[in-house]
Amino acid sequence: MGLKFGVLGASRIAELAIVGPARELGHRLVAVAARDPRRAHEFAEKHGVERVLPTYADVIDEPEVEVVYNPLANALHAPWNLAAIAARKPVLTEKPFARNRAEAQRVAGAADAAGITVMEGFHYLFHPVTRRAFDLVRDGILGEMTHVEVRMAMPPPPDADPRWSRELAGGALMDLGCYGLHVMRQLGHPTIVRAHAEQRTAGIDAWCDVELAFPNGGTGLSANSMVADDYSFTLRIVGTKGDVLVHNFIKPHLDDRLTIRTPDGTTVERLGTRPSYTYQLEAFASHVQHGATLPIDTADAVQNMAYVDAAYRAAGMSPR
Image 1 (tube, helix red, strand yellow):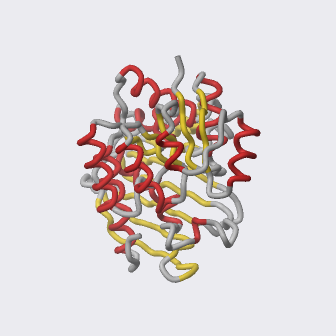
Image 2 (spheres, rainbow, N blue to C red):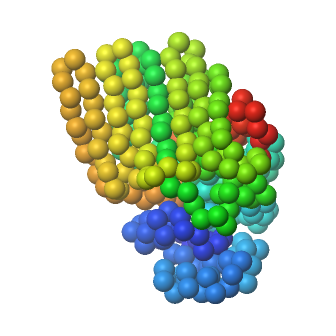
């Protein structure tokens, strides 16, 4: 028996992140609401959502909705996740978890106190491509890790896009850099050394590069741009015995290559174009329905927002 999802908003990411995976895995999208009712109706008709409701609150309160998916603008993640927690409904929320660490802590505290799961959607973590890259490090195949580099780039969103809005907690580090910092934290306990950013408008970074240091002396770079010519999402891990490149760790359904170089030669592995979002929803549903363990929790979400805040400060900017 599949889960019954309520969707907050008719966002761009929802088709890839929830619509396709839910259809493949046998879950139902029973309700959706959006600020623009017309968009909500178009979304429902296109994707087979069973009903359109007037407001986000109506979706959360709908008795048939068992689980909430929240892909709203960054500043709206925490308020509506708190509303879902109050309604005792688990949440799969898009990243970043909140606007800043303090807000993330409030959501985490409420979720933990209520015993309600709120999982941040770091879908990359669930795909075999990423798991294989991390295993190469943990199994010692690459030797001692010396450098981790996450490069994320995309063309500029439209001027009115929420990612350019300070009020809605936009910025390159919020939208892209939260991934890079999350990757670094999966591989150790780095500290932020320095950061550099260019602001498109006051307080909104068009690009932001963050340099990190690991306790063993290794280095890290999270490079993030929302003003690039094209899309690029690469993860490279270098060790004393070799290195690995994940060619598109955010969209492995488009490119599932993983290139491993060691003294024995270069190997290219292809680990499948099933979307990372499908793996993520599969794991989330298994947790909600059967109590299966998840690789991340609210403490992880709070810590990641602490890193985002620290990176903004290191770049001479204020957290959201």
